[in-house]
Length: 204
Image (cartoon, rainbow, N blue to C red; front, side, top):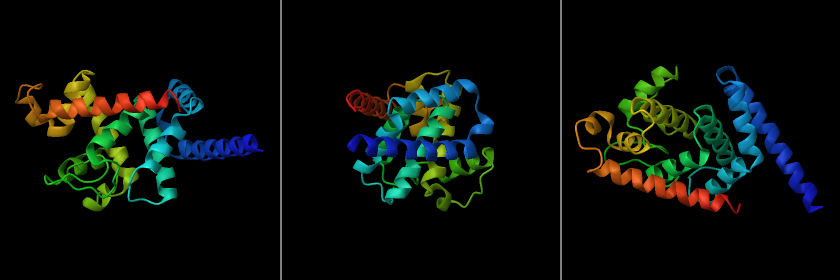
């Protein structure tokens, strides 16, 4: 009986994910990413992402957390990132609390500055409403992952440099020695959290 319940739950989650994926992502991805999505889902990555969100104080309701897990999963796959890496980035930036605001003015799960957010929103053709947009968890993750991917290309897939630039800003990063500042310490924290999530996922 327990097996049937688990099977039904997985089937329902798969159906919901498929509908969301078709509506939001299908026009922009290729077959190889579909295979990646299927592989990650088969290995339980989506359920693991959802469970991590449930374990933390997100400031969101249960249905919002479920949808957020979908968005994290989908945006990660569409940008060829490990969803667990994106989780690690979110944890380091905001400890998963949607309503986080830094002293420097960064907002939301992925701690995006309004000035950066406005530029990214224009690139993604999103309706920009200032902080209101950044406090939308789904848009915040969509924008944050897109921005990280842009920086990753700019810094030729150098993960440390990309993370440092994400944290302190590419202009400031470019003017300094990259491994001597807060950006490098931030990168170390993200990678430590990533390692932790991967180790937990192995026994999930």
